Length: 239
Image (cartoon, rainbow, N blue to C red):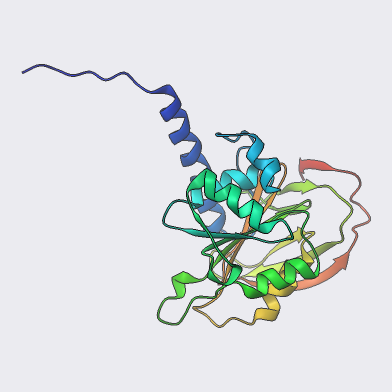
C-alpha cells in the first residue's frame, strides 16, 4: 500500500474561505435583524462583472454565495436582463422574470417606481411552500444599524432621502432602529401585505460592505423620512 499526498490548491482554498466568510456574515445578519455585519469588497472571479451587472462588489459577493445552478435570479431596472445574464454566467444560476426568481437584486441606481414595481412582483411563496418566497438583495448608499455589541455603525453616502425605521420581531431583544435610503423598497414591502409564513426577505448592502437583513418575520415601523441634518458627505464609521 502506498500513500498518496496531494498538493494543496491555493486558489481553491482562497475561494472556499472567501465564500465561507461571506456566507457566515450573511447568516449572522439574517439571524439578528437590524444588526450590521460586513462582507468583503475584494470579490473573486472577474472584477469586471461588478460594472457589467451594475452591482457593487459587496452585492456581487453575496451573489457568489447565494446563486448556483439550482437557483433562479432576476435584476431590477432597464438593464436588468443584461445584469441577470452576467450573474447567470458568473454563478450558473438561471435568469428569469421577477415573479419566478428565488433571488432578486435591486441595484443602488434603480430607485423610485422602478424599484417599487419590481419588489411588488416578487414571489411570496405559498402556504404549502413558504420557503419559495424570494430573497431580495437591495443596494443602498446609506445603511446604519447596530453591530454585535449594540454600537451604532454603518455608512452614509449619496444625496437620497434617508428614512428611519424601528424594527421588532424574532431575533430582536426589544426594538432596534435603522436608517436606510431605500424608502421605496421599504414602502413596497409594506404595500405587499404578505401574511406569514409567506413573504420576502430583504438584504440591504452598501458599497462599503455593510449588510443588514429584514427577514419576512421582522416588523418595520416608519418613524421619519427625510434628509438627516447631521449627515454630511460620505462616511463609514462606528458611533
